[in-house]
Structure formats: C-alpha cells, structure tokens
Image 1 (cartoon, rainbow, N blue to C red):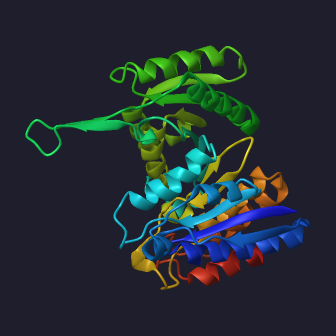
Image 2 (cartoon, rainbow, N blue to C red):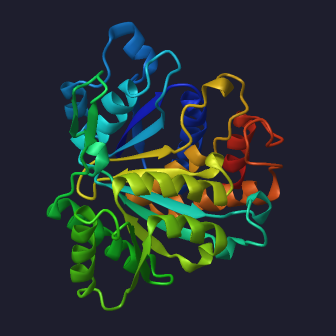
Image 3 (tube, rainbow, N blue to C red):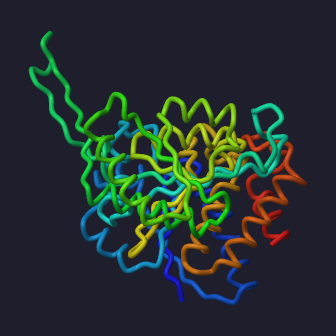
Amino acid sequence: MYRIAVIPGDGTGPEVVREGLKVLESASRKFNFKYEAKVFDFGGERYLKTGKTLEDKDIEELKSYSAIFLGAIGHPQVKPGILETGVLLKLRFSLDQYINLRPVKLYNSAFCPLKDKKPEDIDFVVVRENSEGLYKGMGEFQNKGTKDEVATQISYNTRKGVERCIRYAFEYTRSRNKKKKLTLCGKTNVLTFAWDLWERVFNEVAKEYTDIQTDYAHVDATTMWFVKNPEWFDVIVTDNMFGDIITDLGAMIQGGMGIAAGGNINPGGVSMFEPIGGSAPKYTGKDVINPLAAICAVGMMLENLGQTQAGKAVEDAVIKVATKKLNSLAAGKMGYSTKQVGDLVEEYL
C-alpha cells in the first residue's frame, strides 16, 4: 500500500494533477498495486486566506508518505518568492530531496524545434544538485538603499553535498546502461572555489567507476551543444543553479514544457514528482493545458516506488498519444482538451 501526498497547488496545477491521478488509478488496476492519496492545500489560495505557506508540522506529516505528487506552485496575487521559498524550497530542503532528476527525451520529432533531430538524438538525463549552491539563500545587503549598496549571494557547496550528488549520478549512469557516459557541467574557469571542489570530487569518485566514461563541459558550452549536438549526452551532473537553467532548455528541445517532468529525489526518504512547467495562470480553468508532463511525473513516481513495469507502461502510453494523436504539445493547440488527453493516455494504458 503506497501513501501518496497530493499537492495540486496553483493555476493549472489542479487540472493536470486530476489527469495524473486518473492515470495512476488505471495503472494500479492494471498492475495490481494499491495506494491511497491525500490532498493537501498548500499554495497561493491557502496563503492568501491564512498567511501560511508550509509549517513544520506539515513537513512532519509528509515524512510519513511514500511519495509526493505536486501540480504547480505560483499565484499571480502572491509576491514572487514567497510561495517558491515557503513551499517548494522548504519541501526540497526539509525533506532532503538533494537530487533533482530531469529526463530530457524527445517522443515526436515533429514537436522538436531543432532541425533534423530524431528521438534517438535527444535522450539524456540531467542530475541537478537540489539542496545547496546559490539557492541555499545565503547572503546579505550592505548599505541597502544607498549609492554604495552591495548585495552578496553565496554559492554554498559542501563536500558531503557535492559527493552524494556525484555518486548518485554515477550510479544512475550505470543503471541507465545506455552510453554509460557522465558529463560534469560547470564553470571551472571563473567560479574557481565551488567548481574546484566539484571537479576534484568528480575526478576522485570517477576512479571507482571505471566502466563509466567521463567528460567535462562549461555550462555555456553545454547550452550550445544541447542545440547543436544533443546526441552527445547521456547523463549530466551539475549544481543547483546551472541545473535549473539547462533543464528549461532541455524541455524546449524535447518539445516544450507540456511534456517535461521532474523528480525531487531523496534516495532514502520521501521524493516529490512534478511537471516543471509552472502554474500557467492564464490557462487556468480553460481545459486546454497539456497534462502529459504531470502524467510523466506519475510514471517517474511509480518507477521510483519500485513499480517499474507500471512506470514504463505509463511512459509508453504517453509516447503513443504524443506520436499518434496530438497536433502540438502547446496549451490550446493539442487538438484535444486537457481531460481528453488524459483519457487518451488511459485508453492506451
């Protein structure tokens, strides 16, 4: 029996979560596993009513669940940063979800903005460190509001945090068992303290994984190769900020935010799975948002829970819908409503 905490969140989050839960229910029947889901109201509406984001008692309750399924966080009436810090980052940090896992996989060449690229050319995974770096929130103002103001933001990297992320990436590359190539993406020529640590640890750990080919690319070069030669990549490991940036580019070359899912992983605890496209408030309630990313997140969640056959079946059903049915992956251009796309995935499943 799996216990799933469901956080529909803001904007179109509840709409895509609805379709994801529909597919989860079908998968549970087909593959004979049981689960129970509890919905939590964390997000913008709750904050506007109560002034609360996520409390310590909420975190303690979530620790008892098998996994978390998140829709989206971000409300137009709430100042940017409040919900992101008070809900998303608090979840990641408090639950020690130190890996952000982002598969970048092209399902349909027609939806790729890159010329002549096929599904076999775009199939890689970004392993992003998810608990340190610039997103730790460390820094200060000096002489704020004056002409001499200085703002300092610290990229905080620990040996422990860097090594556990890199080890996860090596293990993932091995278990993925495709090109067996791991690329470190950084900026060693400019960010000489943080990336000296990352590079040293990467090279040390690599000695224990002689079956894995390794290389290095600066983050600016990585974005260039994503566009020019995405087929070069297998697994990429990087820090929190660079991972945040390059995975959005990855989403675009795989067809857009409508198909991009991610996992916030604690290998020994509670992990959280979500579509990465955000709350898209302008589409709220119109039944036009693409739910495939949320459904892919369900597939990732099932795989993480050990239901690998079910997870693969969900992805296979998504591939069939993306290749055989949809006119586009963009909201309002799919040729089907949000609900109808969910129904199609259910049908193929």
